[in-house]
Image 1: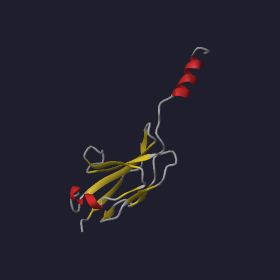
Image 2: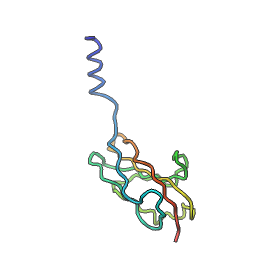
Image 3: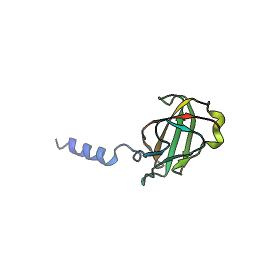
Image 4: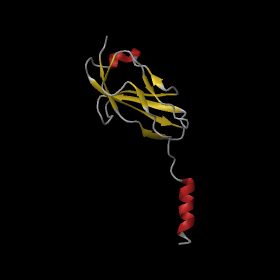
Length: 115
């Protein structure tokens, strides 16, 4: 047991680099029909940046927006050419601290209405 304890202490001290906690999504709510509204999420005190993603599929294999920002909001108003009118999309946000990305927020859906 004495030989195992120092290794466990070393692993606990060095550990794996883990990113900050996931932000909480504020707007738009689940299933919202998006026109020109920006997306908002909570500030994570440990974070220095956020990864904002919108995808055509729930697994985020077909992303149409994948941006890193220091803000807690993102507007897609200038990127409407990427969306199809009436389609459903998935969005999420992760927080990062310059060393690692934390877990993603919940995933929400939006439908897009281009006006």
